[in-house]
Structure formats: C-alpha cells, structure tokens
Length: 360
Image (cartoon, rainbow, N blue to C red; front, top):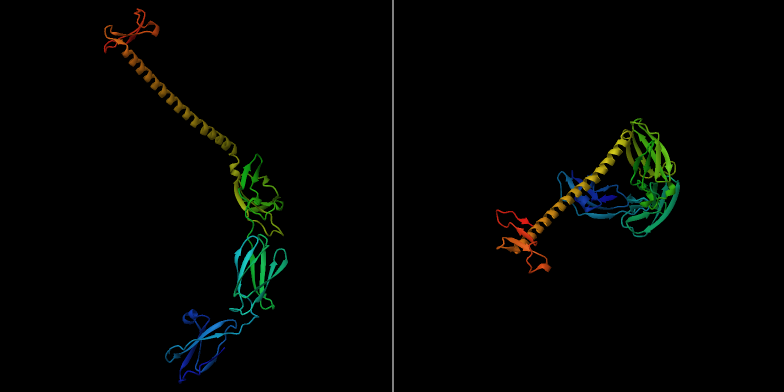
C-alpha cells in the first residue's frame, strides 16, 4: 500500500505518523502505525480487507490528525475461508461456521467441503454455494463417538481451512445394579435402546472390572443381554464395574461408561444383614398393627362406657316418672295389668338421699 503525504507542508525535522486499521474503533484505540520524514510511504496490509488511514505530525510536536480515507483492497479469491469453527456437536450431526475469504463478496462463491472419517477411513464431499460473508453448514449422517477432519476451500482449489471434530458418544446405560449371589454377583442395567434411537441391541455391551487390590483393569467380555454374571471375586477387595455400548473399529467409537462400586467386605455380612432387614420389615408391619388394635380397643371401651351412662340415665328418668310419693316407691307393670293393683308388681324403692335404690 502506497501512502502519499505530499499535501502536507514539509518542514525540516518533522516526523509523520501513518495510522491505519480495519474499523473506526480500532483506528482510535489500537491502530497499526508507521513513521516517516518523507512525503510518501509504502505499508504492507492484507489484500482481503478494507482499511481506514490517517496521517499526523508526531515530532517535534504532535499535530492534529488528517481526515481519514477508506481504502478497499483488491479481493484475492485464492485465500482460504476465515474463522472456521464448530458451532454445535451432536451424536449424528455437526454444525460448522466460517467466513468468506474477504468481506462482502460481490458474487456467489462456491465452497468445497470435504469430510474425512478418521476411524472408518472414508471421505465424503459436499458443495456449498452462497454470497453471504458468514456461512453456516450442517454435516449430517455422522456416527456417535466418531472423529472427523473437515476441510473447506473455494471451488478453484485455493488455500484450505481445516478443522477436526469429535461427535458426542452414546450415553451410558441407566440403572446399573449389583445383586450378590452365593458364589457370584449379577450386574443388571436398563437397555440403552430405550433412550438412544441409534443404538441396536445386536451391538451389545462391554463389561470391565477394576480391582483396587491389584490396581488392574480387566476386560470381562461383552453381551447383548442386560445382565452379566461375574465370578471368582476375592474377599476383602474393592471393585469398580463399568458397562458401556460395545466399541467399534479396534476399540474406537465407544459409548459412555456407567460405573458402579462394589466391596467384597460386605459379602460376609449379607446373611445377617438380610435377617436383620427381614426382622426390621416384620417390626415395621407389626408395630402399626398393634397400635391400631390398641386404639380400636380404647375406642370400644369409650363407646361402651357412653352407652352404659346413657342407659343408666334413661332408666333413672323412667323410674322417676313412675315414682309414687304416697308409697315412697316407683311401681310399674305391663300394659295388660294397667289399672290393676297387684302385690307382685315390680317396685323400685329408695329414692331418698340416705336410702339406696332397690329393685324388687
């Protein structure tokens, strides 16, 4: 870039500063600069950018800045795409983004997108045609846990921009549990196909064991079932078991592992713990039943007492209504004997405070 400062009056000993940047903010905060005592100067800039320039005296004193000028460089379609990066990574697709080699293209630009599978050793090629300065593209049909090398360049086979990505692995199996038996243990887990649509049960699972006593990890095998038997465990050792979707292509493209700790120290106490657990279960049932029975009996006694009191009060009121003050007693008989005086009629006496009540 050639800068001519001949419009300024040259004075002996004056030094000029040339300041330039790609934006106004950068021009006034942190511009690139060069100095000269001449009336012209050549500076090196990028070919695919637009620049703002201004000149001012910086020595022996600092003078006011000149008006800025805008210079748009000649586009170079041999440059690579800029700022290539991944926006989002999933199990089966990836969203990538990049910018055109230079700002504001005035025509459609054809990009060649090459996707190289680093595990399967296969290639796929796509074409993207757009005039946008910023391009966002979705690469589909990827494998969970895969590794890919993405290369993007203009269709004229210019310089390339590249990016390596790893897709998200299959999730770990849920609900991993251990059930101890007499001489072995059983590992149980939920089928991964319940939450991973891309998982097929025929792929199976891998089971590994870490022994803290020997500090070693062992591969126990693989299975297409949701249960796995483990034998020959050593007493007093702590173990960690991992279950994951079976790895493909020489131990690659594996699923995330589910991990569960297990201690053989607990095996000796399993029987007593089981009996204790059963006794606790029985107690948990019997105690509430006894409490309810006690409450029921108490309520029954209260009801009987209240009925007794009501019956006693009713009988007393009935006797008082038949009390004969002349005889000093209450006489009552059946309906057939009304009006007849019968010596054998039932009689209630003793309605005074000092004589007890007698029924004859």
